[in-house]
Length: 332
Image 1 (cartoon, rainbow, N blue to C red):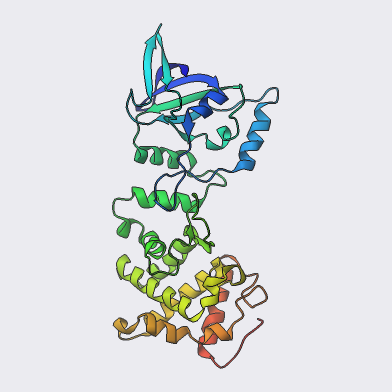
Image 2: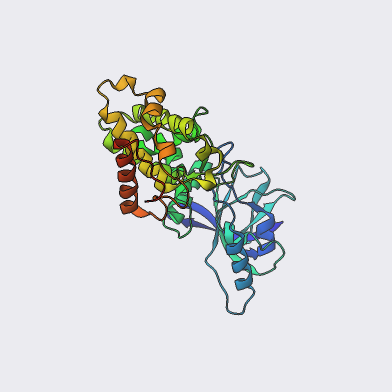
């Protein structure tokens, strides 16, 4: 495959700019979608509806698009070669190879494998995966529909000192990555999910909850807060096992439950004079009466609550129950 291009410069980066049939660009490129099992990749999952909408659009008279953005992975000769020709260049891509990483065009190109419509494109040459991720984040950081959890994951990869720059993100990722955590691989990052695992909350949801904990437990380190968060959620899973085995039927693992329970975790920790005693066992004893005392389902008092005001209301309901453990609340 040969694509006619011209050399250019995009600010401080050398690029190749050209035009080619959609099917050729599709055949020579790939989307580096985040694989949550390995942590490799950085793109979001393909939104087929979005991509099919674009497919229909480009086949209408008068349609157009901004250039598709790629990066040529590897070095010249590693599945691709750039040859000078008559004042321009030709990008030769070896048959069966896909060296063009789709930095910003995944959803436009995703369903165009059989179309001959001409599309403008620009490709960087030889960026590292980290550099691609940085550019993707800059281009798409405010994009509607882009998973905030995916952007948070990017931040985690790019931060030099996560504990000081984004302590709440460190705590949330500890809950996701620690094998003993009930949230282990249960937080949706926005990439390709693990098969067979039911999702409970997004990384962004947990990060917001962990921000509550890090603020209330200051000046404790991010690492200490992560330990407290792990002990608390381990205790929650211990006393409310159905919430983690049947997450669709319980608000414990949804946003409002996560926020309210995190407030409760901070309350319990700050009440204890000897903080070393505040471990899994202590938390389990402190919240043990909440499981039977509150209806965590869609018909309970937390149902319909949302936003910051709803989270405060939910936290206050839990606090009232702790003060009156004998009172069974089934409906607000």
